[in-house]
Length: 74
Length: 255
Image 1: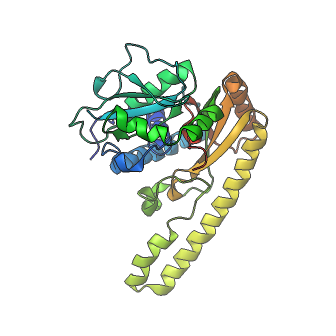
Image 2: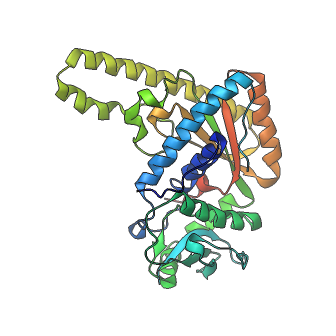
């Protein structure tokens, strides 16, 4: 399972983490498939995606009420 | 000792001495044939399962390379038995890797997350949550078949078919909306993006992302372009992130 270190404070942080996982886990150059190690745990991807979804939903609600666009930090 | 791969660079791109990778290991360079080098660190045994912290550590190292020049980021989780084993893999595709490095040179990745309307929310599309991982292209209907087997086996044929048709209709609408929005963003950043990749997180997400390969000096202009698109139409819901290392453009040329 995934470690317990996923405790982001704000929705924005969760969004940043979700976007990071989305880039790092699923994209990037693959040099040799047969040596991929077990640190690429599928559960992490699921946790990342659900984190992402809940924070997108929350931001969606808050941004529609505020009427502005949240921009992720670099 | 096994080593862990972070990214590929052209020769002469040296990691800062204080840079630490997974498990606090120092990052070093493995030089390969041609104009290809790799940033790696030793990979201690017993690192345990994947954590967000490891993913962050991976990206931190890739970003350190990006601060210097644009690397070809490696996908998270690749290790090799030794420096020699990695070098063998790299040397078997030198020309393709050189082309891939050339393709991203001077660029960074900017990502626009586009939220689709009509979202019933992930709670009502539970099957989508653990659905297939992102693939290229806009996929909003991938879960339909998966849901099928269970429904038919349950014997509630007619209700199931109605539900299926409803989901297919909704999927088709979302797909059309996604294509329409993709085109609007493409027009807004026309001339600023060298390349574009579109990927959805998963079918139930009601959002998709557009990643653009943008010249470093055009990042500010890119942000302004997306910002003014959103300001021009209050119904648009988009989130910009970046600059990232070009993860979405890190394919090996010819593969």
